[in-house]
Length: 332
Image (tube, rainbow, N blue to C red; front, side, top):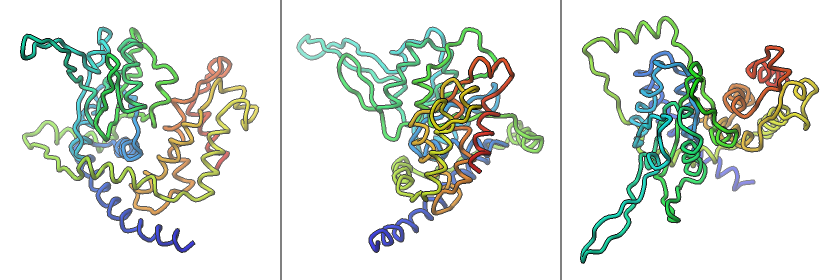
């Protein structure tokens, strides 16, 4: 018992110091990305949890700028790939080329693709073919790629922030369930409010240059990720996570209404994602442990892309948002 108390006492100053740095990073990002505080927070939750995020929003809502900004303030090398129908897996991963060597010898040399970065923006990921989309799958889950039988590790940390346009669905290839499940959170990016858009007009159409400060290094970001995993989670919060996720699965602990409305629900990876996300949110807020309120706040971004409605539910005009809201209300 004393050992646990000592461990908890040692982690407190580290948590407080990390929270202060992360809050500074959040504030720095918010000084450039106007009216998207929740999006910034959830993106930070994703990165501090060591995961990937799917950003859903119409064009022009600063999703690309968000990734560039987070790369700067968190000290991460950031790259962007524009996904198009003719994009090939080798355009992402890289390829082997034949090179002349000394003594008229020729050998294959691997040229790394843009996936070898710490923060990758996959812009309009559903525009590319399934073959190209799947090129990301191994790297997202296993943090390495295999080319011609040789393993190539991606840098650490490694995060993918992918975007989708919810309006133009013609000529797109929906992400398969296996790949959707690799994303820790689905972050919906909405329009800024009037005040934020007004500030944006003056900030982006004037002569002043926006300068960003680098708050963390990549090494410090990794250290905070390890610290997040050490944050203690109360039993009541663990119980709330399990109750919520299991209630979203038809045929298990679900109600008759869930069985009728939900075709397939979240697997164990959703519970893991929620467990990490509530810890990261507690750290961002400067708290020493997550609460049930954190579980409820992050239920939608964790569950939404891991569930599908039945045909009957779609015919009734039901939405996943409404279904998840009812599940959340049952946990409160």
